[in-house]
Image 1 (cartoon, rainbow, N blue to C red):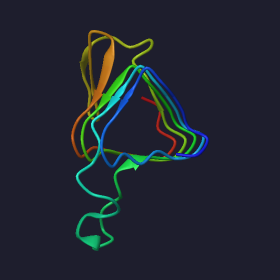
Image 2: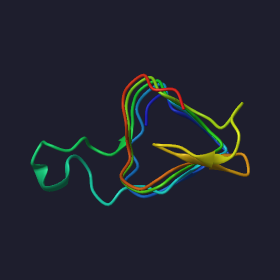
Image 3: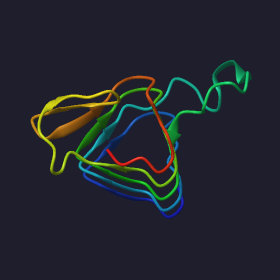
Length: 105
């Protein structure tokens, strides 16, 4: 985890975090495997990409977040959305979700 800034966070087993990423006040549940499951190359490997910003989030197991993503509940109200939900000011990314590079949540 070179050049990664983590403050007030819990990082689960087999979590992969790309360089330049910042994680604040969050919980990453970790992953069940490294790389692509069954090495079939069809699945995106779980983990957090490079140069991401994660804040006030709970990220469930086996989530893939691409490079240059911004994940924060700031400015949003509680509710259910297609890739996430927000409860009590915390953004929650469900198990197995894939978030494309450059996405802002």
